[in-house]
Image 1 (cartoon, rainbow over the protein chains, first blue to last red):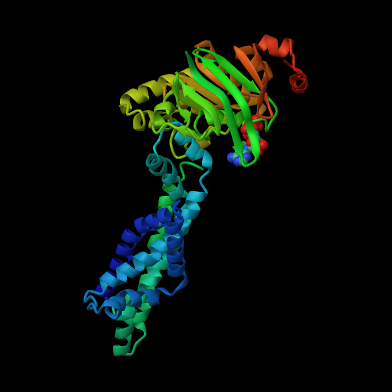
Image 2: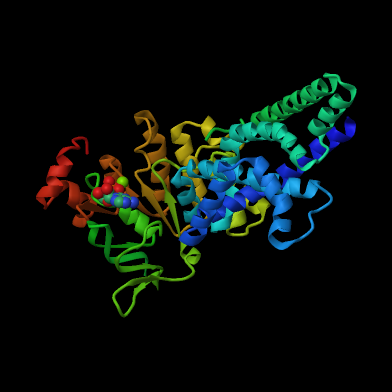
Length: 207
Length: 252
Ligand SMILES: Nc1ncnc2c1ncn2[C@@H]1O[C@H](COP(=O)(O)OP(=O)(O)O)[C@@H](O)[C@H]1O
Ligand SMILES: [Mg+2]
């Protein structure tokens, strides 16, 4: 079942890699002064959060074929990571937005008076504090992601869940599913330990 | 030539005319205090001067250079490059607004390095000297949350001074502090006054204002009600509203 574990890890890491920054871009668009841009982004985020990820996976995989007659991609990791990244970006962007709104306006004013540019203010002053405040929410989202990777089985991507299910059927035993369960559990244990380390590392200051 | 020149400044929030017609000139080396009841527009005046708010009328100049001008249709237009003016002034806030994720030293050197493009070594050297002068030697590696309010405010004064401003604004620098901590902050401001730092100080500390100021403005309801030297304003008060306001303070 090791190849399944590797594939689950691949979904996990690529999704985080793309969705964390993409979420920030979503936040920028969502909070844009341009009403049209922010309205469209608001709608996209509400659809991404309001419909099943499984449906979104199917849409990303088969949409191009239904809409434009384009062959679906062989390597299922690609549509899986695309769907996951966009979906999780929507959730992360809402967390970022809440975090950004929680930073007192005095931080912006302090930086502005010192002559920081808008970008400097955001990346030097605001974002580091946002990261600290949102860390617990991000941890929750990452834990959910670990478990959600099993949805990739919808596209027959042979990650641990699909593999263990098939294996379990073949040998008519429960053990493979149990192994999968333990794998998810240990994975999340590691996530929790790592994230609480990160939180500790940031506890040298209070906001 | 005056460092700051504000003439006939008007500012409204909706139909609340917060600044009705205020003029203020501050020359090099001068210390001007602004007193007055809360809600009178003192903070708004400082926020207009420090470009945190935009004015609706009048003219703002630094070192003789106009920051704003009035166009044909009577609208106020700001200069494009405002950061050239931000180099001229500094602002000390009532609640410090230190950056909590930066150490004391980083709070002080971050803007000189990233805005003024000083070398880190140069910025650190200057920062350490200023911190020492403000009685903060040895605190450079601490974080704002580890410091008392009085120390935080002194750090924020050092942070402003590190930008080497021509003029420094203070908006009630001791109002957020416990009474026993106000003294240490007033002391360093007094020290700056003795060094001939140009300052505009909004304060409720009347004895302090009397001691450090060259000139005092009493502002109420968006207007300068009375203006003069400390002696004129406190010992020879002309206006009834000023008299009434000063009656609340009996230890001047
Ligand atoms: N951002 C704002 N929006 C609306 N009204 C404001 C704003 N800032 C200040 N005001 C109003 O302007 C008036 C003057 O406030 P302020 O300048 O803070 O007075 P002071 O500093 O003298 O106490 C008050 O009535 C206040 O409610
Ligand atoms: Mg005020």
